[in-house]
Length: 123
Image 1 (cartoon, rainbow, N blue to C red):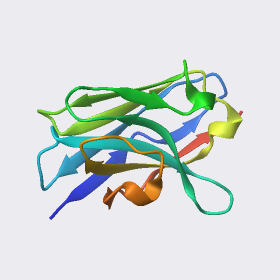
Image 2: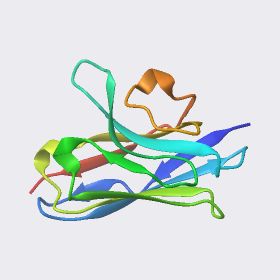
Image 3: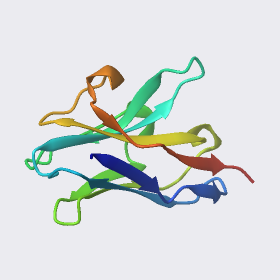
Image 4: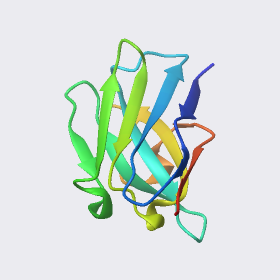
């Protein structure tokens, strides 16, 4: 059974940092792309960052470029999202998701999802 479990969320002041983790179980990670998403007000989830299979190409949504870094450890079956210089508008639930091989900007292209971890940026 495939499971994705996110952790690392919490309350942080503006300008602070957090590192999110997504542990994947149930299948190998090395041929998968992993994305981090957050939710828009209408309910749709939008991609924040994505890392493709073991060639490691990475993609970022414009508003997080230079502040967020996605990385993976295939041996630990874990994907990380390092977030620095956090802004109040980064407040959201962050989800990790998996699909085969290559990244996609669309949430509908991802096959497996975690339950999410809450990030709150507030003074």
